Amino acid sequence: MPGADLRKIGIYGGTFDPIHHGHLILAREAFEQLQLEKVIFVPAAVSPFKNGPAALAELRLRMLRAALEGEQDFVIDECDLRRPAPSYAFETVQTIRQREGEAAFYYLVGEDNVEGLSRWHRFAELQKLVQFVVLDRSGTVSDHPYLTVQRKIDISATEIRKRVALGRSIRYLVPTLVEDIIRQGNLYRKQGK
Image (cartoon, rainbow, N blue to C red; front, side, top):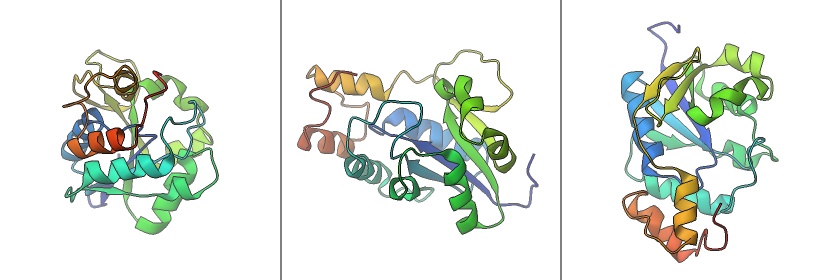
């Protein structure tokens, strides 16, 4: 466990395709429960374990900025978007550690990523640099060795993309400004994935 006198910083990587209230609520829960100084949202260029994002990087970044507007405890780092794909957490953490200096780093991951964590690029080294925190929206009991921030939230980016593709409302699932960007950019209309 990190020393009590160190600054505590959360790193939340993901495609955020799109960012939604589930992401934001769990990031706030982690911020408060772990007494973090801030949470750094890092939009991925392309995840090594997922298909490419449906929305272009600049639109996902625009949605993320809109969702975090006026939020002083959450910041965005574009380092993964500036590097060639795929986006590796190990490289992200190294970049942020160089900039932030001495601190305890907590890497926030969704429950759906736990099973594949051991396959992450340079995972053994990454585990020495961060403490993983699982953000669990399922509300079920999980069997893993990581800290868990849990809150039952039945919202997913996959569901949001499907609803948009079917012409259904996403009101209350994403921040209003994010919904505006999705509508104006005609995002997710062709794919229901």
